[in-house]
Image: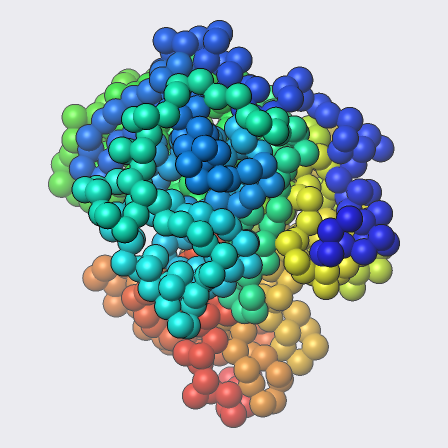
Length: 584
């Protein structure tokens, strides 16, 4: 038993990791490990293309299953024979989306090591904490981040003495580092792990992107990844003759599980992009005959803005030279991670005509836990996306269950329409938080995983439970004891013509504890005023719920998966702390 978990908490975790009474050790997948699955795919379809990669300049490369597996085996040999990495060790990466990064991930999983990927957009202090806390033994670093890695690992403020060696992934060899491309050349293309991993082997140590406090390390095992990939592919009818596209960062579970592990699970293929680019998004889908792409709401917004600009210039909304007919193979977009507003969902679907398969999940539940069903006709789809004030996040996928509980943590389950905390249990629930016994006790308090998100569900005529998320419980605005969801207020803000982004922010107030503020980014050329916004909100909401102050800005703090970080905006409202706002 880990020091992160006491006996009572372990019993609660075991209960939270069961699915309809079936413990997580009764596996729902037929594979022994991720490496076993990859070996099978390489034997069955050696010449089939698995991974296509586009760099930031549009240069394309591809790897068949056999080629990909051979490079994974070479990297696994390097890890074991040259770097002394063993099953159970942690390997960190300071990198970005690249085929090399994907290969390093799978090599770690072949030997039973866990990957601790770093988000390069985070500050040095946070990355230093994660490198230390993860107890990673080596770190793979792309050339452009080497100086920064040296500063973090060996500097006095953020040192990580547990890192034995820095491996340079690319660029010209430097004498102070092991050069990955050079070292790979002498490694065999076959690999037999000295201590074979199992489905219980830890594979990912990813850190939550909270805005306050130390980040929590989420420990996932190989079975978590395969169980969630199985459920995602089953729900969406993803098969081996289909191709997915990755535009999200693979240091996050969304990019990793949905668009790397899921295509492997079904024997399909994936197009990995260095980053999202509106100008080539639809063109790449057309040229590569992509069927499904996973995005976050901010990318939907970028796509709509690009289409508007193209239309204004008399060009195709899909991009230069791209027609709707060239996209006939495309099925739908998966969207989750960030807050999806009804207005944005409607705008995108009206503009492009493709359905958004809205879903929900967390790092702690591996990735997705629910999606809208794919068998909904267009009108029914629109009903669940538009008619409840929030787009539905759908129904629980196979392998996990969802329910709404009282937010006090007293294990009281709530019924349809009642708001409470979204809770999950199933085979995709994490092993635990690493070295956080306090968080484990509270999170698994009554045998379910407590998400920290507020939501509710409604039931359709077939008895299916459709869930909705209404906000983070910690981000609810508590005005004088009455709590408001920021999502409710933001839907109204986005009704105002000229408002590009509208966020409801709880700011400290001497009279009510917290008051309601609005942080607004306007569309280019818009002339809407604070008075316009406040007047519209007071027509649509009670005075108590409506924003009292509008702060205009041009930047929006978001995580790399597109989640708005409202708590980071509180300081922009400090001058109104001592103001008592009265009804006009």
